[in-house]
Length: 584
Image 1 (cartoon, rainbow, N blue to C red):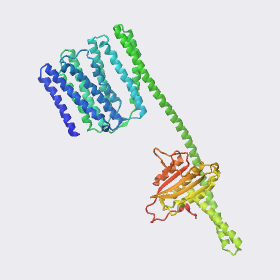
Image 2 (cartoon, rainbow, N blue to C red; image 1 turned 30 degrees about the vertical axis):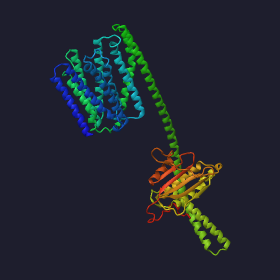
Image 3 (spheres, rainbow, N blue to C red; image 1 turned 120 degrees about the vertical axis):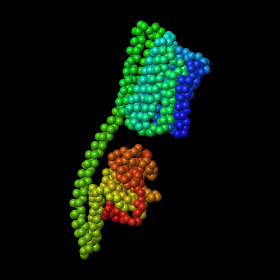
Image 4 (cartoon, helix red, strand yellow; image 1 turned 45 degrees about the horizontal axis):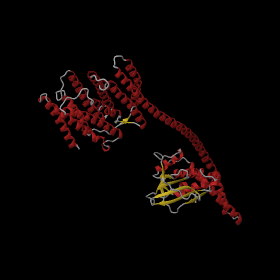
């Protein structure tokens, strides 16, 4: 790639030096005209060939950068087409280019896609909405700019031929267009950074040299001292060679960096496009009441003004339609955000109530645990005393029920106790059994029964037993809330081992549903973020444990699956059964 760039740079330098040599050494003659035109044609051909590969997808990191190079290449193609028409008359036909020249419109238009390339702002980031609005505003400006050319130049070329007026108006329009391009490049070079600033700077230097040399050449034409191949063509050829070298220089720049677009850019483009639209009626009125204009020119300009007004009006209508749709979308999003905020506030209030209730439950459980300890001690004494067998059996039953109550109280204390996360070897089945003892009272109001299919001899996982218990209880409660006694469904909890992963399934078991298929991975962040705050917290806890939370893609099916990684050092640590304290 670098060897190829060196070859093209050497070729450009050789052609530029060749232009200097022929302009200084060859006197004014048809030979000088032919050689000079061929050199300029070769320079433009090389420039177009140099810009073309940059427009390929593989050479541009973003869509905006690729569009920038595509539009720049289109400008170079139009410039080459103009030079080809010029060479047709002076090289092939061996005659002077006619004046006025119909190819001048191509020369004027070759800067239009280049100015459009600057409006793409490839060095900035912007969302699709801003991009569409900005490009539509810029399309309004381009339409107005083409209208100005047609309004000023075309009538004296086609309607009523007047060569001096045509040349003066064309030179004014073309000079203004070049100044707009230079101003745009200067602003972008000032606002951009890094490689893009260097690229804009190179384009600004080459374009400034071209604009100044073109202005000097037009001055020489006005003073009858210009001819093809004269010394006025030297800076013109050097400027073309400079612009042709820009794509090769771009390979040395870092064009991947970008920053967020500034809103002021879109504001100024919008303001200018609205001013351009408002200027059309005044331009039409000026043409209509200007008595110095010939009647055919006046009629032509009035028709062009009205047609342009209709075209730009349609574009403004389209723009306002896009803005209206965007405004409706923003209002809908604001309404949904407000409703989500209210729902979040209600959930936070409910969470605070539940936290307060948990503290009350913890205090009550502590107070209940003291008399239970006394009852258990006295029942054990009665069981060991010399009572009749029937009374001893009753004392044993009292002892069993007290132990069961103590286990339930211990589970409640474990659930509400605000302990910091502590990872350890956890027996998932023990955690689930603890949760199943807490669930029946919670599910009675829904008329739902709990069934479990816990696989035996499951290896432990590295987790915080208390956090895992919270997650299991919440998932079971989520499913139970979607069931009622009329569905004939039970809450089923199932565990199994698949390879190095332990699966815990919570689903509603019904004859017509069968076993659900879990294929949607929920997450605390990202595309499939959990829909509720509490479920999002469960996702975060499971992700911190190195696992995943899944549910069926059909969100109407009440089911969840926990995927937990089995601990690798299960043989060296004793499983943590704190969550199942007092269990069987």
